[in-house]
Image (cartoon, rainbow, N blue to C red):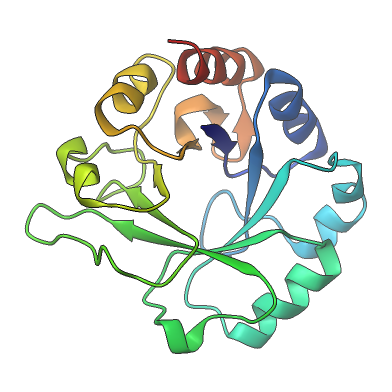
Length: 191
């Protein structure tokens, strides 16, 4: 299992997440998000991310060509799609993780063609019923409201391929609390 710290917007937070043991870091390229970071802002330091740490670009209903260009410019490993994308709108030449917000009345597609499925809460920073995760046979990433205090329970209940947090380890949107990141990663990875 790996831990992804998402919403990384600066070099210091990225390096602190990696030092604490994150296996993946996420960059939000959706301008309305308070965690948005421009590709230009990342270009000066993203090359410092060590090999073996997954660099994940988070996109919402972005044109495939735009995703392909940003992924190539920044040498991203994964495009995490958080909108209404369908398989025919996937970018080419990059691994795909598809995110679904879990709503009480809707179960996401368990057969969606992506390397991994990320289940998120209905709103930013909210958990979902983790029993839903048991329906997913493939690589599952659990997100949504995870904090150092609840991530161990999420891991034990869902047995995911990975876990993902953004707001659960922040001082403010886009600024990470380095101590909380370390606590989160330790709780996630150490039973």
